[in-house]
Length: 450
Image (tube, rainbow, N blue to C red; front, side):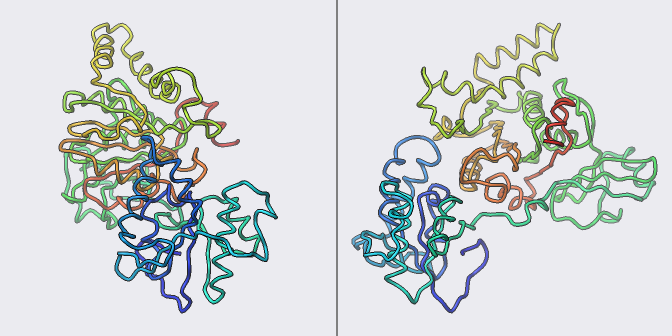
């Protein structure tokens, strides 16, 4: 299958059949199969027609794909093989009719389900082109298994997937037996040149824990300046880091030269709390603090099933963010002036908390923009969000790549993993993975044992 940065060379030209889940994940998917041909069952277009209205990302992907096909076809019939515009690409067509099949998916699995019609479309293509390798591409694991049970090759959509996710960039390194003189120098000087102090070569902004017996220092390596500087463990907006990883996160969040930050970690590691406290600490530097998260409904039900207006429907999904803000406010108990100030920031929408779908079309200029639960975003969503950033904007993604709430994403294919892997060497970016849970001993028990 097509993979980013790799050109497939195979003596056997393939035909890839894409299902709806692939298009809703990446509307440009048809252009990522190099010299091979790509086919779309007509049932996929029918499903996309149901997704074209709305402000959710899948609605955007559906509309973008429909426009892409329209531009590709122009005056040609898409029921015939049409050359794709991208250089060295194969051809594209929509599968309209099913031939008489030896094995019929609807007879095996049941009639009336679009997935089974898509299987039949792929089986029909396989029968029509016996000398070509026909592969069904789907983000739906169950559909892939059904295809393989019918002797139809099936694969996941690999573009954007991260391999060896357990080795994903963590943003920090611990060095033992480090020079005690340098450890002392770090504590005495605000900056040190990194060239001659024995740090391993790095092409990224990076955090280090330097140790020598009882001496230790926590430093940030600035790849652009080639310097290291000590990392403070001081509180930010009365939120004190409880471990050095949290201090690293705060350092990245407060650094004005770092415009893009990602924080990855289990539940209870303090990701959202640290991001929100750091934003409030810098509130005077930004026009607005915007905190958002993608809406992922329980049992995959749309918010339209819930009673009330848009706000009452979405407030339950924003509750964890409000909880963090309430916790920060509690740190100022007895300080009526600051408590009133936080209330004022909310009333005047200096702090805005809303679902991600509600910000489409907004200009992100001079905004401290926090995206919580970013593991539920696709790589294309992450790219779209970052591409909307205007001048003097800082974007922070937080999430847990092992806690995916959407059916067609996993730890390898979600947008947060994609961002960490692809942005790790950029001078405007910093990342830290938080490992130690600080919510409570009971929460740690759940993460460690259950």
